[in-house]
Length: 349
Ligand SMILES: Cc1cc2nc3c(=O)[nH]c(=O)nc-3n(C[C@H](O)[C@H](O)[C@H](O)COP(=O)(O)OP(=O)(O)OC[C@H]3O[C@@H](n4cnc5c(N)ncnc54)[C@H](O)[C@@H]3O)c2cc1C
Image (cartoon, rainbow, N blue to C red; front, side, top):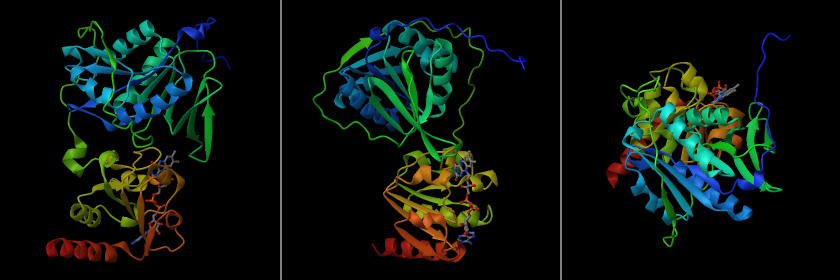
């Protein structure tokens, strides 16, 4: 007892009324806006409408003002642009310092971040620095009695927890890609653009990126997060070599290759392709689950797919309860037949 103590600043009585507006921190990658930014904007607009506040976007990077137009078309009220050549590469230190400064100056009521690799890296740092709460990986956000009700799975996805933040502002949450609906294009937007004057200290950086290696693109083709069609393999695939059957079908369908955590843990496929609670949340038009039993941790990551097809040799497998179509049998026999039939069909056309 008493071996560890955490000293926290006493929370002073905060005047909550000075915190206004619902903000999102947009993510730009490889010179394009990641879709999750539009998903956050869609939810932010809904929350702001209910609170009668404004929807604001924070754009950070080098030469990013040009992306304002896209957020304007989708109904943002105000866009804060933090442009600096030193923000060309993402560094936790520089990005978090800029966001902390901007939040402290403008006092937003709510700030939403994408639960991407960068968002998950930066949001906790900002929360810790400003002594704020942060709810990670929210699957639902709404307003209850003027507060942000942040809903997320807890205890392995077995319960949904509702979290509110009564005493500190801004209220902050991260949201996974493919969970919320994107803000629709309206074409009649008229957002106010605020260009921020910022200073960036690259000398003080403790960590510098020397090279970015895109393992996903190199090893697995299409990233699962952005795919329209996904063919996923689980432990039932049986071996790393057998994953070729999954890849062959994915190639014919121009699909991404996904996996359960079991397949990732066995070293058959990189972690970047994992679907589920501790992997990616996906929402493709078609999801083909091969040799995957359908545990809750996998289902939470893919159950909002439009069409689910399951291939499993166990007719009692839980995945069949969620699948629109099911094939009971050995995937080693079924997948080559399916791939061949689709190839023949494509050649006919
Ligand atoms: C905190 C936490 C987080 C987790 N996060 C995730 C996550 O993000 N994603 C995830 O997937 N899991 C996650 N898990 C693990 C999860 O609980 C399961 O262990 C995992 O999903 C099981 O993977 P699987 O379905 O591939 O394997 P299994 O459950 O072993 O199922 C294999 C299936 O393959 C079938 N099969 C076997 N051979 C064949 C064949 N020849 N042909 C056809 N079918 C065959 C079997 O009938 C069986 O249904 C998490 C667990 C925890 C505790």
